Length: 287
Length: 271
Image (tube, rainbow over all chains, first blue to last red; front, side):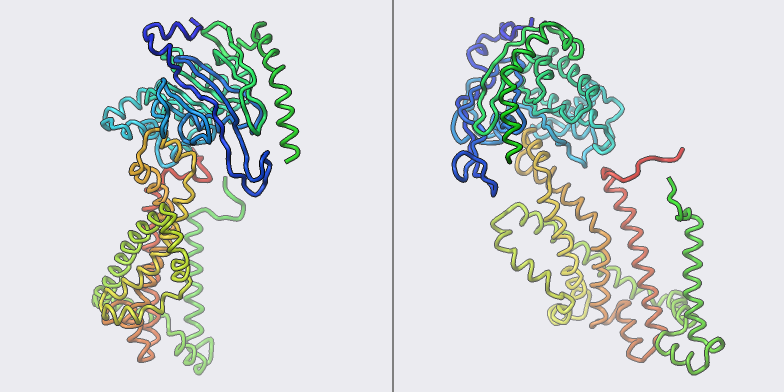
């Protein structure tokens, strides 16, 4: 049940087309005043990055800080057009925003003037759902993320973990086929973080979507994913290693960290990652 | 938590009243013969009026009902100037903030018009619109417009890019972004400037009346000043101040209701 292939059994077409395919993506930015790029006046954040997420697969991308992980995710979301390369969603080339994807941001993305209920509801009317149906669904989703009774709270009245739950419900209510998550839990304390990770896994296993999960935390990546991709240090980030995580599901993110297989996987991925982290660290000290 | 040195609200109100009483007492004793010489009292009364006289004029205004049409006109001018100025400021602010081309084109003119002492436009408005309500509203609008405009402009520019990207990912069209992101963000800035803009609308109305009119509290003050009736001038000022305070209280109420989502510094309540 851990293999992604079994999910696609009912939909043979999906086997051929990956949910998300980034093909030789390069992102070059015009550098600001501080020129730290390789070519004069340019900064290449991502170079020739190729990455594939199968339907129903949970893929994590880890890499040193500032290596361009978020850039890659923004390309997948269609928020950022790559300088070169191709993005395909279920086989179709991506033009504009990725309508099959939900995006969970690293920083707070809630509208401060909307209550929790209105926040979760937000996306439905944008897509033409009637208000009363949308509201009923939003109540249901708030309950599912454990926030029943908090419908009328505003973001400033919610804790960090609650805000993340609201953001999660806001994304999942639209039933996106692809979930893009940009270090969504990095601002939370360790305990809340593990709770949220377990909740995410529960929700995900009930209705398996393709997930592209960005993190700098290797333990988080291993405990959640089917596959972990390691990125090189920037500039010119690209995947340099790929590891299949064959840990059994369902998992408990806190307990699985104690298992010998986890430690083994962690060791081998860290071997690959270590050099890049040190490189990234050296660069950030120079800058 | 109660800060040391700050009295509780009931006692504070008493102190406020005492301070006001003390001010009136000082005013009274400096303008009435008794504590000061008769000559001195005459002089000060000429410049500052006599408090008893001022209160009497005020009382007579309200008792006879003579003040109501004037006060009504001034308030109508204030509200119209506020409403028109806010709507224009909101519209133009949204437009310029969302259209870089228009904004770049208008920028020097906006700056110039804002830097100009706009009260000086009053005579021009009087020529254009006559001595009725319209010229006062026009003056008030020029004052209110820029406050609202700059706040809206700022509000739109400061919409968090993450909130915007999130709404786009949720499927919001350009029109929906305007309605659900830019407009709420901009209006919150407008509300935070409500006190200033209502005050400015009031200033526009009164100054407009003072510079040429046939009705309004500013007109009453102008008339009284013409015959050196300083008591009536002070009575007018008293009425205007009271009005401004009432408007401010109303604005505070509206603000509290509309901005419930705003974080406050202290959220705890005593049980």
